[in-house]
Image 1 (cartoon, rainbow, N blue to C red):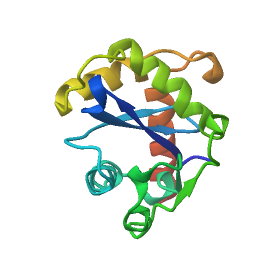
Image 2: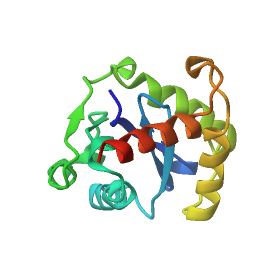
Image 3: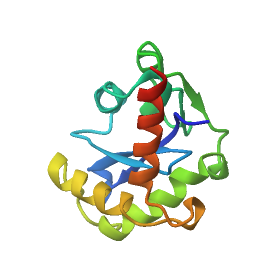
Length: 156
């Protein structure tokens, strides 16, 4: 069912910089969210801003790890996007996100400071979303996500 997301942070050099990653489970569409800090308020506000314009049928849930970065999860839930937490030390419960984070690391390797430039991060996400996936019979995540949005618009 479309609209279920998995999220995490990709941490930069010396743990000082980070970017949030959101992956839609059905299409494997990636959103990279620029962060100016790693505290729960910054992460929560950035996620709310990033998903705020998505249709409600594409905002069904968000699964996050058990870290303190989502301490203000009730603020995200208040927007209509309920937050669920994976069990501790169970990365397979957010497998799509873990796999996409590995691809993100091709562009933002460990030990490198991560920029908070939204244009640069959007370009990285666009390039990743334009990689065909065997899972979708070689359709791109951007195409699969566009189909989800079109299906939502036609039912509205």
